[in-house]
Length: 171
Image 1: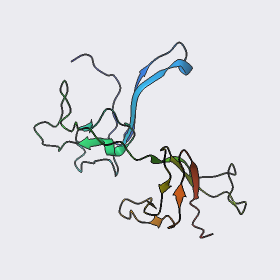
Image 2: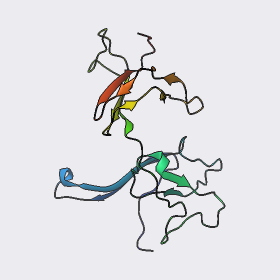
Image 3: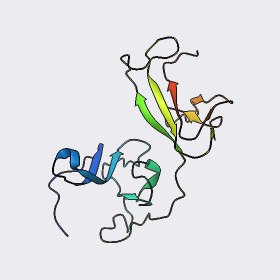
């Protein structure tokens, strides 16, 4: 063992960061960080004795839940300190499309075409090609992944943003 961390890890989830402090807080360098949770889509344990959460591919984004796996609670290789993670695997690059910003309580910073300031979600295409969004859905429920479908004609150009209003209005 190298040393003992005097903090604690919360079963309910939190942000964990590896930071190299700078001369001032503005100069701090975050080497790696993750925001894990105890709710779906993160793996959970009914007995509170959670599994080891292991990064699958260190070359991919640590904030993508799909880049983390859980060992089973009673597995012989449940934890792997000092060894390669049992879940290690080279993943294909993640899709170029992601949720870039969410404003669930909009106090007027952004308004829709009718001048209303409802909640919204911003998507970003980081890729070099236009993306056809017709096969994509937005959801706020893991038990209903097809809650809201993008229109058949929807697309998002390379390096473009789009705002989707989440106010329940059809217009």
